[in-house]
Length: 385
Image 1 (cartoon, rainbow, N blue to C red):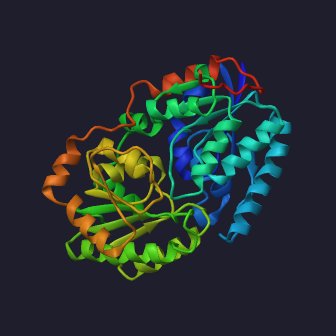
Image 2: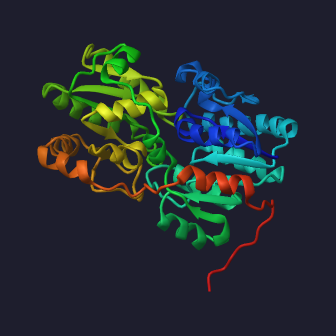
């Protein structure tokens, strides 16, 4: 059986990959191993490694790598710790294929370590662009370090081929997160409220805001602009459910501002470190709209027929459907944007908008390649005639 190793560093990538991990485990055709690192092992981010074990997966290696600070120096040191830990993990587990998702710095460290160990990498979701974060460059770097490529849209597949990758190893499969929604066992609003210990009511927004790492030093003013604009939503009777930012450079600044603001609005605002996949999707199912700069607002939220207000440049360049409205990270633009997406006309448009990331059979298409695709640790650059 093929030895397939999944590496996960955040609640977000695990929530997306978990059903695929389950499919690999249940296939009977592969030996699954799991390496948890970064945010999963930090109490500050909810010790989400416990969610992995609660789902019935064994953790084959825990790579401690996250430092307390969120400066550029701390981020680079975390990357180094990730590589050091993975050196020991790869030597012991000896996988035949490593699976990683996304564009975070710990995944660049993982792909680089796999390269030196001559382990092929299967990369979920290259070819995309997010010009407002350094993740954009990381994603393209991981593409060049990877053997198998799975993309969320056909255009992204073409872009990876344009980067010199063999078309036979580039698969347009659609977004796992979108297919996961169709298989989710949603919580009722009452169950969700009990689970988080907060009454959301019939009118609430799901908000997530990360630092735009391509614009260092602007995270404070951008977060304050968002929070000032959200005062209008509170005045209009909406409650706010915030999920906390990831461990990006500047993330602690954003998180501290959100927590302080939430504490100043007891009963109207809840700030939760990690909802997990089921609670998060359940929240989207009952929410009036999504606000912030998370990729989920562009990828998963449209499948719920709700509007997304996408703020700033973090997701600039990523495909979006008609349910998404883009505004600058400016208080007046965010206020106007909130009024627009919560209008009856925009909500009606969002309810029927198509999702550009949807494609039937996503899990099975990825699983087939993971189990049976030819593997190699060496590849050639393919020139386009």
